[in-house]
Image (tube, rainbow, N blue to C red; front, side, top):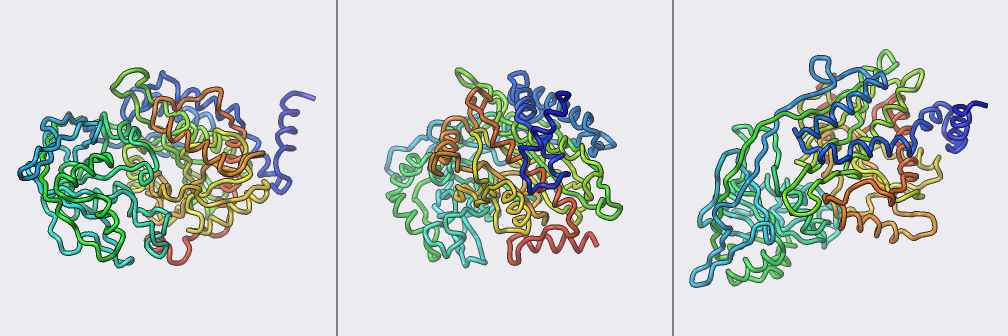
Length: 548
């Protein structure tokens, strides 16, 4: 018996009996060897951390496009190419006027850049700053009419610097979603809402709990060149966007005779009103501006059904990471788990589904998107310039990091309960003898932190799976501790590299689950739907109406 046949039989035999023969054919193409091979190249030092518009990024684009071509996909980018190019603006800032907080009759407080605070320019221009701006504590900085919640009330904050709590209210399960973070808890929401109210700047209070990561992640993520899509003239923008440590914010409040803990307790209630801290802040930055182009890599597997082929399922994974940063020691951020592993999964999914005959009924678009680490820019551009009308996009499966810790009896589904995609995932997991759980860290607000969020905003039901925590022979806490150790030591750090500690057996099962789920979504008579009352249901109805 030849070696290929032995491998096929062994691979098929290891797959769940509840999978159909066709599903087994696809799933057997997912292997630890192919996943690891893609990661080793994409996370190699040669690619220099794949920062947007860098040489390493271009190498990643070409590698992914070459893989798509090898698999027989159809180019779905600009002018018959593999790439959907778009402009990005790079902003590298330097503090020129120290961040100084002053109160009458007291010694001014000077915040140390990077140590106490991180400042990012809010405007796409060469220099900007604030001088003697009043500082106001605005609680969570949330305006949520459906929750009868308004942290701004009728207070005029135009031209002021706002101190804002990270996350959203979690002390009362009847408010917002309790400990499950909503978009209101995200830093990008807080900056945008403050800009809408005319504020000049925002300081977000960092705590390990509210951010779900240590201060060094802020330091690595918000220093160096920051990237944005080109600003539009009508877009309200802050002058300065800042993060500061909890200790620094406590000292700012104390300088004005206020207690930060008392302020935060008051902000947990609907009747909270903004509190002027009695201090003024001055700071200025100069900015090195660059304009460059990056790209999403788009490959299409045309559907086999004459009618359903006009609809599509989008599979996304971001190909960028943080590049090379200034500092001592290892300054190259390889981004192996985040997100070379996600791109590896995307490529294995493309290989598995392109091997099928007949192909899935709906078309499948594989999109390796750019600049996710800079604020989901690639998927934002793709969703604003869709190659398929949003009302004809059946679903989005996004992969942002794989399980590198071994097999689990569970898999975490970020967004469980939001759409009818639940039914597909639960059925496939059950066939594997596994359990689907919700996000094991709902306080992180993961649904709003990766590329599926942009698809949801245009109404597309979105699926985002993460590593489980129930490893054989261990309790769930053991698995949670593994993931937390990664967050503490490797997430957005140079240590995110593939090494001998990686165990991709669990990743294989997870990607096989994704493979079969994709097949079932692509072949289903009806497209998935958001659950009634979901926050994205209205956008879906609008998209479907437009598609008609």
